Length: 335
Image (cartoon, rainbow, N blue to C red; front, side):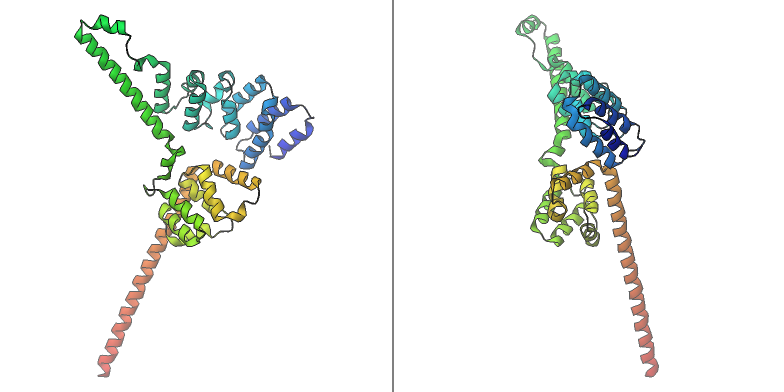
């Protein structure tokens, strides 16, 4: 089934038949073995405007269908996940379109009902599992009532044991919170730090991009990706931003930060809101591992170039030495 099928569905559907269109579009999409990025974007463009017009049953149907879909559109899944747990449960339990950060945010907004559905995921991050357990058993971190403490006062050993248990529970809860905060860092200022440099790569890229001096930005990009200047120049020297998109995705920058850098380097590529939307869609759909593969290829090219240059220098040096030796022999013969 091609992307034209979505358009045919819209044409055949009369005005006001949002319910049928909503279900038919998702059913057609789920039948695609490997939908393209364009088809994913088309489904979101078609269904999200209809979302508030369809019934609870249709939302439940679509949530169940997309929960089994490997390439489900992220924006639609996130919208459905915000629904009551009776609708969102299949997505909360199974969908790969929801990241760990999405799950944490959903638990924070919807509490235990969503948390219990998320707890049924097969490969749940241990930190999220700890958070759900803490929500399920909040008494573990509370102090005992005064009357219980009074009753236990004549018995030092049980009191000491109870205090130790409470301290251990409190420490476990705090450890879970600490790990939770560390997971949330990519959305905060600490996202500036990346695995390539261990320093504020984003700030350097942003500031050099905003200078308008291409060489400054290319130098910062080369440092961030650990490639040579010539490769960094080729990344930003192309007519489009596709190569830069991969570079920024490999650095794991958030969408807004990646866009800020891209619009500073390629201001002419974003003349209208649709162009911005296209960039964000492409950035979301670009898998980080694919971007890292591209950066590894750039690094391999950098190494290959260095080896070729070194070999050329070595051969040139040997030729110069040989030439100098021949000149010396000629001088001796002449004398």
